[in-house]
View 1 (cartoon, rainbow, N blue to C red):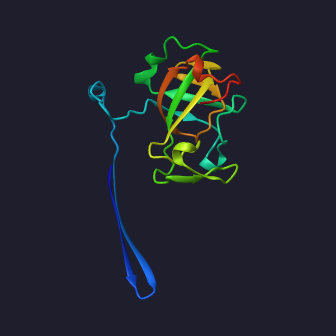
View 2 (tube, rainbow, N blue to C red):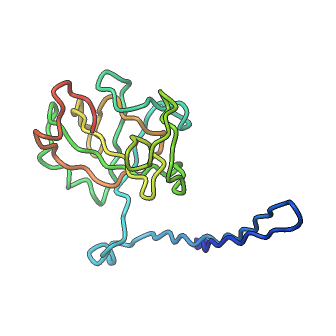
Length: 178
C-alpha cells in the first residue's frame, strides 16, 4: 500500500477575508518483509508481533504504564520467538511499540491531565513524529511466544517493535513504566 504526502500552504487576501488553500498528498509505504529480506532490512522497521490489552480505543488507555494495571500479552511472531530465549518470569523488560493510531502532525499537544500546552518532545504523548511507545514492565508469565505483563498503556493490537532486558537505570524505584 502506498500513500503520498506533500504539504504546501498559500494564503490569499480577498477583500477583508483571508483564505487558506492547502494541498496535501500523503506518502507512506508499508513493507511486509520476507525472511530472505529480513537480514538486509537496513533502516526499515519490522514489527515483531503485537500487544493484546483490554483497551479498544486510545481514549480507553491509561495516561501511563501502571504496574498494577490489567494483564497484557506480548505476542511475538513465530520467526522471532527464539529471541525470547533467556527471558524469565520476574525479569524486567523494556518494550518498544508503534502507536499506530497516534497523529504524527501535532507539534503542540494539550496534556491530558492539566490541559497545559506543551511541545510533543516535552510531553508524554503518543502524538509525535515517530509515535514509539516505551514501557518497562515485569514478566509475570511466559507461554511459548507470549509474554504476560501488567499495565501497558496501548490499544489492543498495537504493533510490537522490540523487547530488551531493562537496565537498572530504566527501572524506576516504584516499578512503573518508562
